[in-house]
Image (cartoon, rainbow, N blue to C red; front, side, top):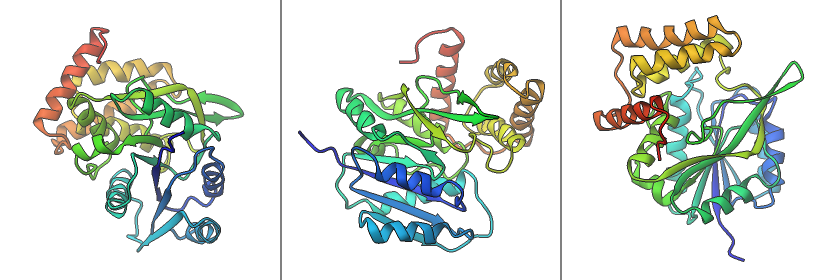
Length: 287
């Protein structure tokens, strides 16, 4: 059997409450990575010391510590760490690259199944499983369309990723890389039957409301049209906190729109994104 090598990059900042669970879930994978680079962005809660304990036991786990920049650069900081990680592994041969957050509990066969899927479908450039969270003891699947792999635990085909360049240093980086993949004719997929536990609800690192507003701003930055986003925001009224959710999404989008914030996509990428939105409005496949 061919051993499929992959390397993991994990951005880290102050994840002491969930870090050890993530460490154990990766160590217990049926197919462990060739290397796992954990890039610490100035943690002050003891997270690096926890990682070092595991580095001493498992030589394939590597810790890189950066100085504290004094602030958690949500989105931008993650993309910068991912770009640093890609430079660190550029001379390490592996067919695949994974991005794993430090607040996950992955099933033992998570990467085995993703690797097998990628091998069987060479057109796919990015894939992930489907994350879920618990709220008040109830399990909730995070919302992910078939084409939008979760940015929390993605597997990239490195040869395709190299064609797309560096990750955009901004919130929304995980939308832009999907656009760039698809512009080049590659597919992106979510394996809905491969569920994993996201221990902190998506977008809530700095609070739930901030996350919803940021979602709206991200949509503007990545090239959503106002009509499509308005429909998306009202569609989200079905989910708690209902009207407040829709209002915060619209506030985030149109405050960025009024300020004319610079978009993080090129005109070509934005045009491609608009075409995808038009197809979705007509209930057409985007593949």
